[in-house]
Image (spheres, rainbow, N blue to C red):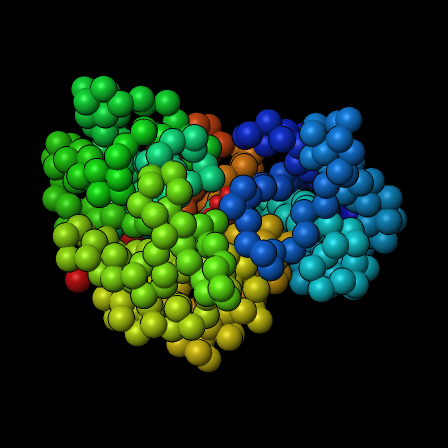
Length: 429
Ligand code: PGA
Ligand code: ZN
């Protein structure tokens, strides 16, 4: 007889920013147990599923998650006890039905996702297979190109950069482990160059340096110098990727959308001017991907952006799509963006995440599996990237253990796959 759930327990734990998050452990009748931990964003999209926080100002500045924990230990545990874990979609559907809201605001997306992920882990453990195999079967062989966030700005660092993430894309590597080695070498070279020039080398939320540079262009120059200094060819071995996280910069004036570059003092740009700025960067720097180049409600701006740059580079929708099939479908229909950022907690369950990935892939959009700025040592996204052959992952810099945990998990998966492991240059020009 197949195993059934004998207990579900949640606990309020801390994430990498020292804020509460939720951890869930599921035990099966076979005695097998497994756990998962839920991440949390800072530059969250307006249409993300709801992360349930207690709002009790006497605890953790209102950020406690005891209500979400109680939902798991109470109603969810009672409803799922005795259920099998072989059909993960059925379990997720049950959770979604129990919640009954559009944005998971009753039980909390953090509560639901914690259970959804722990169920996947315990199902894999029960069958004695690796999670990526359980989810992806024998065709799960592609190691992702990592987008390695080595300079942090925006909402992730207290510095002068408006652009949230400056990433290395080591697409010219011969394997995932080579990509990790190259990125770590460039990361250290960058640290040395910044220090030599008198800049701070303390790191931001995702482990990238957070120097008080004068401008985005100065950040690009440092990146190119560090790629070359480490012995690699910019644009061939390693290119650049950006997350502008521009929903954070939106300011409305007379019904018009503007982007306020407050931290750097660049001033105010409209969509058209911002697209022109991107075009000028593409002429000077080897940029292969721009995420959230425009705001989550600026669909007309996004259309223009896609018309102008969509055939040249990857345009990733993060806040724009919030891992939600409904928004992705709209993007496909309106020819907006050509890539989707995938964050499990934006939608709040594993099966809906898999649906979002499949929907994007079917339309020829790329998928970039992503961490959040508030993370834990949970490594589910590493398995998810391989399971879906997504081809790309965003999981931070080459330091901070909550980021490195995902790289290390991918190194083990690569090793386990042996000669079957595939590493594809998704930005070949
Ligand atoms: P977040 O940032 O986790 O703070 O939302 C990550 C991103 O914008 O990609
Ligand atoms: Zn983003």
